[in-house]
Length: 263
Image (cartoon, rainbow, N blue to C red; front, side):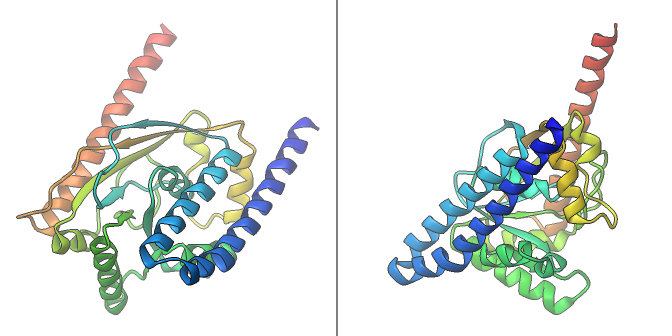
């Protein structure tokens, strides 16, 4: 009974949070553009976006261990991709524009909030869409803003890193922006539950996550990669190698700790 009441409470909080998001996106954002300068409106919007994601994180009871340094200047941040939760994990630490699959744009409520929040949508295999995405990413980086992309193009269980789509790195090369690899790892019960793969329904997965006491996550900001003088395939491979090395290192450490405890 206690568990059911806690779940109902969390679901109620999520519903209220989405209504709050609709007010922010549909009322406050347009109002800011009317009463503030462009730069001031953007700054306030960024603050509201991170604030909203922090509330989301608190409701989900995300327990995040963060390593590494956040980018000082604008950067293209690239991460392995496990779940929709990745967006909450990363987005609460710094204002960013996410690159996401165009499918998300059609999701009820989430799609609208994503569009209003400045998410850059991409349709794989469509040359016109890829070109438009590249141009949008270039414009965002030139505005000294951060972009987060998931170059694998899909989610995984977290035990492997798929090949990267090198085209996503081109905007960083053209704007001479730094590239920062990120590593996300869910641990504890969330390691098996958090992956959002296959044809799983978002609402069902959300409820499954809300049933967990807490969601433990490791988020590591790896050293910057300078894009100057390199091509997109080279920086793509370098970023992927750094992410793979960190995941392998963490897995080895966890095995050693498990064996020590078992002994």
